[in-house]
Length: 225
Image (cartoon, rainbow, N blue to C red; front, top):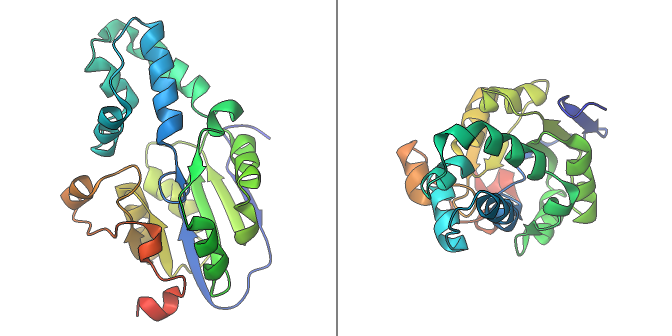
């Protein structure tokens, strides 16, 4: 399987509602992984390392890792090399083991899977590593379909394209990308602000988020008429 190909795993769907979920920042906390790679690259290039809380708030405000490093004095000439180093490290299996499932998420998925067909759509460059991570975290069992979509310029369109054959009722994520994908799919967007975007950043896109996934009833169809 090529790393840049779109991988999909499908099980026979049940009748009823369809709920799409994002992975990073919605179901799992990926801040530790991103910070670890940031620290390694900063030290390698002789840059000061800012605290995790400062770094992650910059990221939640929409800054990329590269922008965070530039703010600490990374020479512009090193941008291409650092960008390549980031891509090589951020989805390595060892790095992915730094991710943790948000508290209460597995119980939520178990309950929601009894009321709706759950479909995971995540953007990753390494499909095999993503699927292995889902298995190690015991999350794969709750999804009727799993779609790993490669990074593309139009991320919202890429996510939507992965499930364009399904009628989607709800789309839950943590960024403006998920909100855009939901609108393309004609689904009800539900965006949390506990992940890779904070409330103020989401508000800039006209999005009114809920705090976490646990603020959404697992019985979705009964909560969002």
